[in-house]
Length: 118
Length: 412
Image 1 (cartoon, each protein chain N blue to C red):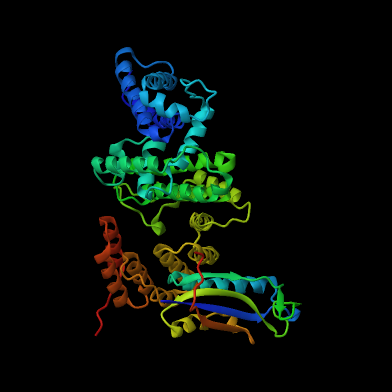
Image 2: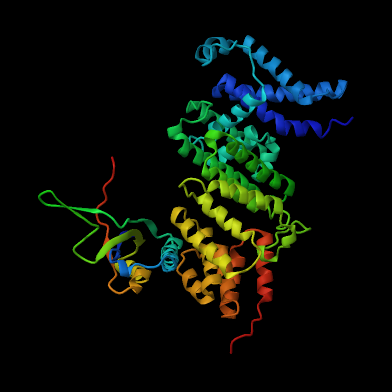
C-alpha cells in the first residue's frame, strides 16, 4: 500500500465564481461524503484545507500575492490517501466532487520519499 | 440494626478516598501500604460495629481509624524513617498529620486519576486499577466485569502497581504543558470503563450499570475542577449521558438486548438526555473538536426519535468527520448505515462492499439489512455469514429474527 497526494485546484479568486453560503454548505457536505467514504475504507492518511490568501516567493527575492496569481486555479486543499496502485488512487480522485465544476482539477501524485524527524 | 449492606456501601464510597489521601501522603511507591491500611480499617469496622453497633457518623469513624492506623504505621515504619521522610515534599506538615478534609480528599482522588491512567501501564491494567483504587470495587467484582478469575486480576493489578512504581509516577496534576496529552489518556480510560459496562457480555446488569455510572462520576470530577474542565471532558460526559439515557430501554425483562429501532422511547431517561445537552453545550467553547465531540453529536441525534432525513444527514456528516480523526470498523459500518438512510440502499451497498471488513459479523448484518427488499437471496447469504461470526447468544437471536423476517422465494 503506497501513499498518494491528491491536490485539488479550483478558482478561489474570481468573485463571480464563488459559491453562496447555501451552495458552499452543499459543497462541503459532498466533500465530506467523499473523504468520509475514503476514511471508511481506512485509506485516509491526512489532509488540510487552505486559506484563500497567500504569498509566493520566487528567485531573486521576488514575492507576490498568491496563492498562485498567474493561473485561475489555485490550490484549495490536499489530502493524502493510501492506495494499492495508481489506478486505485485515480479511482478515488475521480469521485472528488470538485470535478463537477468546469476548470477544476485534481492532481494525483505518488509519495516516494518521506522525511522523518530523527 | 443490620450493618450488612452498610459496610459494602461504605467500602465503595470511602475506600477510594482513604487510599487516595494516604497514597498522596506516602508517595505512590507506598500504594500497597495505603491499600492495606484502608482494607484494615474496614476489617476493624466490621469487627467493632458487629459488637458495639454502628457509630452515629460511620464515615468519620472510618477516617479516624484510618488516620490512627496511618500514624502508627508512619511512626513504626523503618522504611519511612530512612527512605520516605527525606523525600517528603512538604516538610512543614508534621510527619503524622493525615488530612482527610473534603478538599484534600477531592484533590487526592483527582491526582490519583492521573497517576493510575498513566501511559506506563497497558489500558486494561489502567481500567483494573481505576476500578480498584478510584471506584472502590472488590477484586471479585472486577473479575466478574472482565469475566476472568480473581487470580488473574490480582496478578494484573500487582504488575501494574510495580510498573507505576518503577516509572516513579508521582501523584499530582500534570503541568499545563502536559495536561492535554495526559488528560486524553485519562479520558480514554474513562470511556473504556464506560464501554466495559455498556457493551460488556457479563450478565450482571447491576454491575454493568455501576461501571457506567462510575465512569460518569470520574468524568464529573474532572469537569468540576478548573484545570481539567476542558471541552473534550465535557464532550465525553455528554456522550456518556446520552448513551446512559437508554440504559433501561435497551434491555428487556429477560435481560436480553433490545435493538435501537425496537426500543420503547418512553423508557429513555429524559433527565440524562437534557444533562447530555447541557454538557455538549459547554463542550462547544473553544476551537477543540475531539472525537468525543463528534461521538456526542451522533449520540445526541440518536436520542431524537424521529427517523427524519435531517437526523440522518447530521449523523452521516458526523461519522464522516469522526472517521477522519479516529477510524474504527464500527464507525465505518455505522457511517454506511447512515448513508443508506440519506442516499438510499443501492448507494450504501456500493459503499459497504468496498469496506474490507468481511470478518466482522456486523459487516454481514449490515449488508443483510441493506439487501433486504432488494435481493433476498443475497440478504439471506449475509445473514448466514453474520450468524457464523456472531459471538453471543443474544446476537445470534437478533440475526435469526432478521432471517425469519425475510420472505425468501427460492429462485428458479
